Length: 78
Image (cartoon, rainbow, N blue to C red; front, side, top):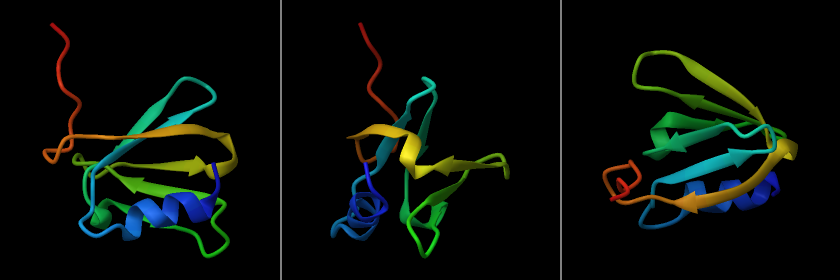
């Protein structure tokens, strides 16, 4: 995954919420473009969370992304 690929998801019209999966098994949801910032080089992704915390993601460690429903959360199994 590259910074440019994530930037394309960010700029998509209409925006579709997405989940970023990392090599260490963690994942981060981006429900709206206002919740993320990609560094100018595309190497670092900063994601704001609803609880005023944030996560910093090294884009080189992103293994995949998936789109989410418009409410920004994955559908429950079952």
